[in-house]
Each structure stands twice: as C-alpha cells, then as structure tokens.
Amino acid sequence: MSKSVLIARPVWPVMKRLEGALASRGRFVEFSGSWESLLGGRAAGGGLAAIFLGEYGDAAVEEEILLRFRRGEGGLGVPVFLVGGRNALRLAPRFRRAGADQIFSADLAAEEIVEQAQPLLSLGDMYRNVLAANRELRNLSLVDDLTGLPNRRQFSLDLERNVEMSRRIGRPLSCIVTDIDDIRRVNETHGLPVGDSVIRQFGEVLKSAKRGYDTVARLGGDEFVWLLVNTDAAQAFQAARRAQRTVSGSVFDGGPAPVRLTATWGVASICPGAEWTGRSLMENADRALYWGRDSGKNVIRCYPPEKAAGNG
Image (cartoon, rainbow, N blue to C red; front, side, top):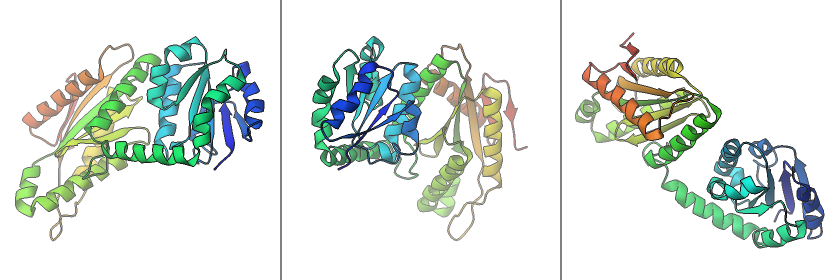
C-alpha cells in the first residue's frame, strides 16, 4: 500500500500543518501548487494513498479538474479530501458529486482532519479495489454497447456540466446532432450485422473528428451527438462540414461489398450571455437535423437557420 499523500494548493494554514500530522502516522507528504497537478504526472499515474485539496477559487473550474481526475485511470480508488472555507462547505454536495470523498473546514486542527480522514486512509488497497469495482459497474451503464462511446445518459451529464461551465466563464458551446442517411437501405441490402458494423464505423469517424476535450456519444440507432467546447456557431458549422466530407469520402467495410454513406447534420450553439439550457441546445440541434432530413439529406442545417450546406 502506498504511503504517499499529495497536498495540492495548500492555501489554508492548516494544510501546511497536515504534513506533521500525517508524518506522525507514517505518511510521506508531497506538495503541489495547483489542482492541475491531478491531471498529469504523479497524481494521474496513481499510486497515492490520498489527496488533500485546498479550495479557494473558481468552483466550476475546480469541479472540472476533479471530474477529469476521477475519470482517469489514476483517479480510481484514491481518497480525495477537500479543505476550504465557507464556500467549500456551501458547495459540498457539488464537490462530492465531482469526486471528493470528504469536505473539511479549514478552521479544524490538522490532527482532527487526519483523525476524521483516517478510516479512508487506513482502508488502503481495499478501498481502492472496492471503489474501482463500483466505478466499473457504474461506467458500464454509461457506455454504448455497440460503439463503446458514451451513451445518452453519460452525454446528458456532460452536457449539463458544460452548459453550466459555459455560463459561468462566458465561453461558447455548440452541439451537432447527426444520423446516417438511409441506414434502412444498408440493413436491407447487406443485413443487420453489416448495418451494426457501419454504425460502429461511423462512430469511429466522429470520434476521430472530435478534439480531445469534446464529447461524441451515440443517442441510439444511427443517431449521434457531438458536443464542441469553446466553439461558436461558425466554428461548429465548419467542423460539421469537415466531418460531412470525411463521411461522404469514406468507404465503410460491409463484408463482401464496400458501403458508402452520407449523413445529415444539425447544428446549434450557445453564445456567452445566453440563457439556454442543455435541453434547449439539444432540441435546437434536433430541429436543424429534422429540417435537413426534410430538405434532401446529406446537408448541414443550423439553428437559428443562418447557414446550410449540401454536398459541396
């Protein structure tokens, strides 16, 4: 069992005193100046017994860092303790949902914090293994069986989090909803196994087109959604155009015979200052997609209806 504990952003005096309290119990303490250290190097690689985080800043950004850490392999099973002032205590439910195990007031003594944290610290590998198993079961319910992409449930969670982030820090957010044109014809001509294979390959095309911090998910059937972070309407339209051309120019493996596809794309965006919800963003992208279906397929439509593209 690892004996190392990381203390990140020790902005509160008690966090410096934690070093002595932890050392008296046989723990080695490492310090980091920021929460970003969770996303690379020592913390992301795993092997830590616990992490103490000093909360004093933009809670939405801190939530995002903690969520990303928890999603990574190194974040499985590592107890995370957050130390902060009134803001941290007020937002405790949000930080717990993001992955913090316990929230401590910075007014507590270092020994008291360590004493209360001791049950999780002492469980060691048992805690890590149980949490990893539970997380694996939970993740199974958030992944699409056919494509391995996030499913509708996971996408809904990502959508609401990113809409809130966009609202807080004033960045644009865009959504592209797309489906394969005439997938029924593929199924009737080549059979359902080929149709499933084509859907899976189509998902891979979208996955390759997205940036690392975007989300591509399968909503069901041949319908997919692509959430583009910090992307305005014009940029989202260009992303959809690039993906449209890639799909149209690709040859999909259909077993004995190659399969060519086209797809229809619906685009919607949230601009800084807008009061749209995640639901309204999705509904507007769906409206654009339905318009595209009704106007010839293999097109891109936007909501509000400002731009449209055909095969060119």
